[in-house]
Length: 191
Image (cartoon, rainbow, N blue to C red; front, top):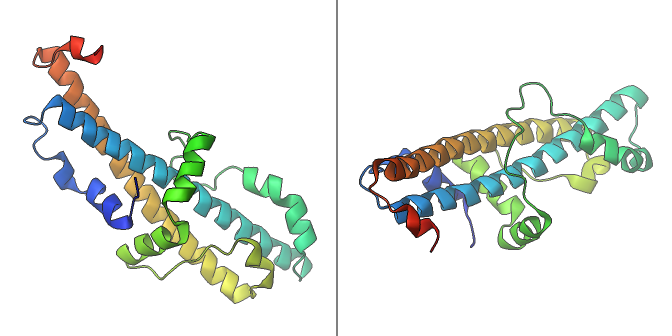
């Protein structure tokens, strides 16, 4: 399943919650499953963006402390940079954790830079690129601009994740209500 920014926006739309009381249990499950899959993609994207934020921040900190860039020191510090706790106000960190097979599949089905650019454009933000290993070659102003854009994209991705969580909860509640009311057959779960 390929997922685009348009797909994500459609899945986050309030219209997805319309007609829950009339939808069949199978339709509710399909909506929930699509939202869960999109949440996993957004969780993955958010983690990638947060890693880039951490990397750019570490490079800026090093330059402020030493007055220069040092790729060797940055590479050496990478494990601690990427394992640092999320900054205050970064939003919720809990999520369904993609397993390695899911992550490999996500890498094959989405182009991170493309979807991040689409999401940034949808939010009215400037295009963002993932600086990655290029951080040492970038100027300080370019790094600061990149950091600001990455933080804006992270906010947009996190906001969409929150909406998807609300939708998933609504779909799940509607499914549970069907079973509680007797309008859905619990034996169908075993088939």
